[in-house]
Image (cartoon, rainbow, N blue to C red; front, side):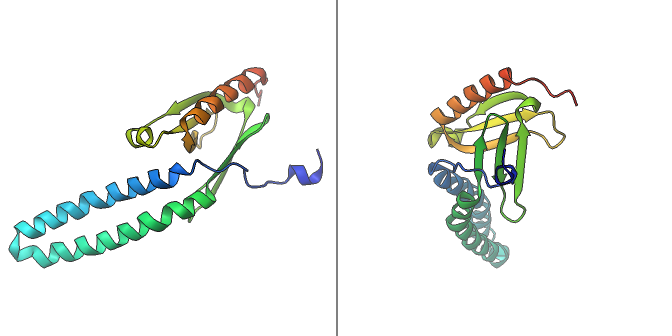
Length: 165
């Protein structure tokens, strides 16, 4: 391996483009529930109307801004890659996190599909390792790709000798 190959580089694979819409749906739901509660209470409780509707409006504007922009930023940042040696991920926004899980440390590989993920035909691959940091999650993958990735990881880890350290 040359010096250039040993350097830490961003993982090469992007998430499925549907992940942007999935994240937007999550933001909308997260915004809609408290805004609706505040708006209904504001409509029903006349003495507190201003104290309820002003925060509802502010939350709606902030939530809509996050719904539009945050998923686009996340899509540019979030990456993943699997090699014969390790699983690599990069996630985050303010605190970006790069995770590397050597194949010899992988204990289980799972796929998860929440209700919204099912609507958008997406899945999450969860790679559980012998790390105190916890599992590595590769979210926003197409369902078929996630299944293929889980199968590939299972085959690679079975063929990889365990780490004795």
